[in-house]
Figure 1 (spheres, rainbow, N blue to C red):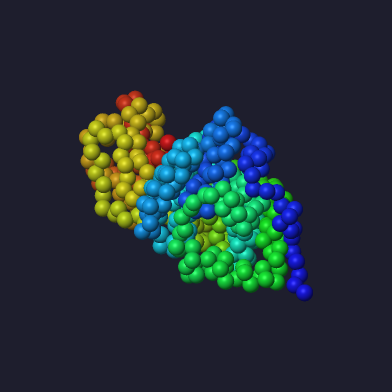
Figure 2 (tube, rainbow, N blue to C red; figure 1 turned 90 degrees about the vertical axis):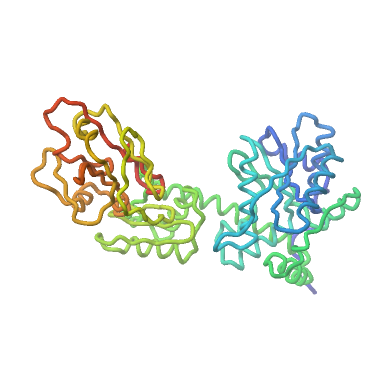
Length: 467
């Protein structure tokens, strides 16, 4: 006899406006509740429930939003359907058009999802809540997909009921209901909806799982969706406990001044706690999590490298570099293609550098350590980058010094050295990107006016700017 799993439908709450209202009240109130309305059955049910709440509770601001991806031939017809339904229900609708074309390395589903959420994030105001119509069967499918991808607790926790989105929140008030319950409600209320033909395409993992795998599993375990949703909740609870420990361990290894990780601090943690701290750091910095293999490489190559090594581990969203005792988390650094000298036009105080390499800022009221204004104004000013072998005489120090050694003494990471702009006056090195000024241009003991150069570095360099 087949095993059963989960709770019977008879013990489940009914799909009613009262249930939706209780769910909204169980969370902090929002200025606006946006129903994400695709025109399909699930979001149609959510829209209808929300409209009935609005009909009796005029103090709740409920609106709808529809994302036009432009990927389907019927996309315009779907938008028209959404406009018609919202008009009939008295719900104002905002239509957002997005470019959902996939980028290299993205699946079509991922590209559409990212475009959708980015557009919604730009639309909503502070504290607003976006209501999504995902239900219990969606939750079960998400958990299985994450299992098949080898996900950790973050993935196995599947979809939370409430989560942040920009300055607002996402709320999934229908997670307790099955697809069958939503279908029954839609038919009882005489709702109409559109069908996305791509939902039948088995080339998409979720469709294959929904149409081929889940029916077979339910024939053996009728309560499958309930059981999997319950497992997702258990994983979410465990994730919260681990997240608290991860924040504690991250604090033990983090350098708060520049938000790097201390290699020696990480080394004092257990292997498991190192992974927790590293994941927490990456997540807090807003990067997508690399695979377990990449995380392992980061820890192995960074922690085991000799003090003179500079390992770099890259993944699609970024890279981690080690310099001395610190790990730096950076986006994939763009190439520095500007190798020809760049002329700084006379009279210009702010010069934007090519390749997104920040800006140079001229201050005309500098004190000691600046460049004599008379020399600056009478010279041809060019910006160059290191070729190797550059030397500079610093005020108060004997002899000329190799830039490579000066950078090493100052603890400047190698990727910053490569991009540090060198300021030449009439073919002579006068200053180095906000770090040093050559003695022969500073007029020591001279009270004449001076100017100084600071380099406002791009944030992706991972180090503080000199301005």
